[in-house]
Length: 364
Ligand SMILES: Cc1ncc(COP(=O)(O)O)c(C=O)c1O
Image (tube, rainbow, N blue to C red; front, side):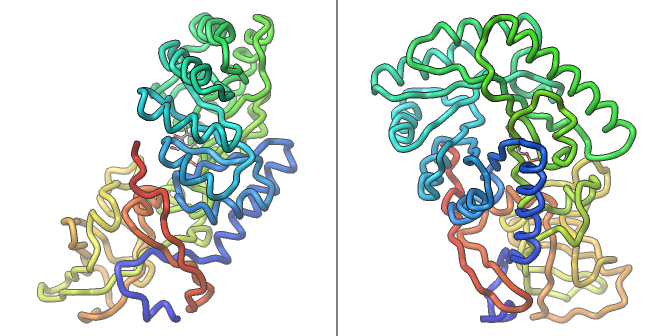
């Protein structure tokens, strides 16, 4: 089947670009002796998790228990749940996952660690723990220094769970420029301090896990890091490109839409809005556009309703008609993937794969 025969809106993945992205990061991790545990929240597809592991990834990362259940289909040797698992219902499901593969969970409270310990004892399974440190994003994680060590000591004393080390998410670190240099230097010093204090306290440090897509290729500069878990790198998106972490030629995913109205002069409406693209604005920018229009780069995707995308054509010479196809690189591919039941792998104009987005909507 050709792309032009696909019904729209549809996410298409350029397999040549995706494979290049996967190989580049696998080679980087190998070269620097970093374990790769890609975050599958971007693609949400077990077959793609399998490809990442076939290229050398040591396992995969998920955020939600439901995603962990789905990713078992890829037979990972290890699953990192980079999100606290709170509440009996989820824990009952998590222990079933733990019977099938080695799991490690990120926590930043004794409450969460105790729940894991109780569940592991009650159901006779092993669960690893990484204590999360806040290295500057101010989202999750305890403050490095005494609060981090204190939690580490308390977790180390809990039965049935294995403290394996530290995790952090450097989502605040930019990909390039002076600010990013400073952020990387600060992060490296902080990680060295944290790990040295941790070791001095006699706490186990098998894993130091970090790594996002924007700062991906600087991960080797963070001394003491053992593992990276980027997610977006498999496809990249408008935001990744906009922040200088990739080029447009590295963006593997785009959304094919159809023009459904040209009734207003110098405007067209496409058959995808916020339920197709997500409402994510361009990160770090006051400009309002919701994607890069490959077929008309000077057009602006200015507004969305649920099923309508408003494209401003005032700066565009080309004429569009109802029925035309328009391909758009979304701002944030991870959220867009969550909105689609299936996506298509393409080579040139040929659709060669269809994948069910099996972990979409797995919010629990
Ligand atoms: C805890 C955690 N680890 C890893 C990642 C992957 O980062 P990126 O999407 O920049 O590749 C994320 C992304 O949200 C995350 O929240």
